[in-house]
Length: 211
Length: 211
Image (cartoon, rainbow over all chains, first blue to last red):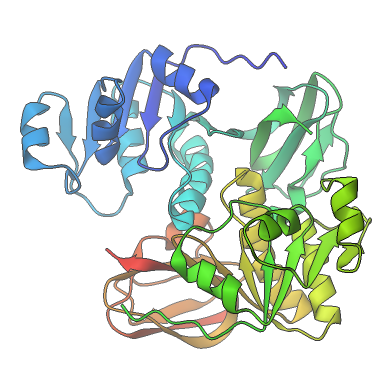
């Protein structure tokens, strides 16, 4: 299917299910900079990936682990943001704006919903080019008019954030300014690209596998 | 923690990850009526649970399976609804209004988002008392003023659908009419119940485990 992702400048590894699919694993291997959310830092090291930074309140990390990795552990105690947002603010302060999120789904469903919806917030409010890659596909936060690479019969879902006008080209089913998450799911790419045109923000989900 | 669910009148088993936690498995065992979405019917039978109905377009079912279970297979071909909605309309036509959804998360994340958000649609537009139980916790679709059983430090997330006023009692953090999914997550029950008061619809997520 020819899915290829550029080498990411930075990956944030969250504390959901650790990736098992080759595509997210290759991003984890190839990233220039790896920032882990709290306990995900321990998981990464156990799996053989050395973080450049571990960000969080440290509550979920054993004391001896924190001492051993003190040089890369960055304590952020404030409670207004979740771990994913703490890590995002941290890498933004390092100068990164293109961020790939891994391990951000697959455990508590409310965390999954929060992490996915936060992509839109990072894009709109923090100026991040945010992509989340899972074991099944990937989300991109975007706005305005944008073209997406695809392949014939790739499954595509469009989640409207705040568009009052929303149109697509190159998708099997027409778009409209969806008011519920389910309304934009189960679409399909017709060929090797599609275009989305909205007057606000949206999330695109594309699967690794064709139908 | 004393979580107990009444014996469900009907369970709809979707084609996400088959439950592994004892709570959803016990609901599957105890339900009076079991309706499976297409291929989930095959999975259920392989796991030892006999469906009362299998609803879908049958595309994902082998021919010999369809023939063998023709008496309980109900072919619904239309493409406007996903499998979960087809099954929901089917059990509503059987007279059921209290529906427990299992196996509706854990594979493609766009299906997970769609299935969760559909709970709100079923509640608001089809008059269903909808609950989705996963391996980590459960979602309930509700509206207006409602009291929820809980336990101290149970993790609670509130997803606003269309409320312009939204308040809580008995939760650690104040509610407001959230405009993004992440804003209402990571709340916590203070004691054995909490109250939500909204002027519209919302989804509540409660975990099996305390923090």
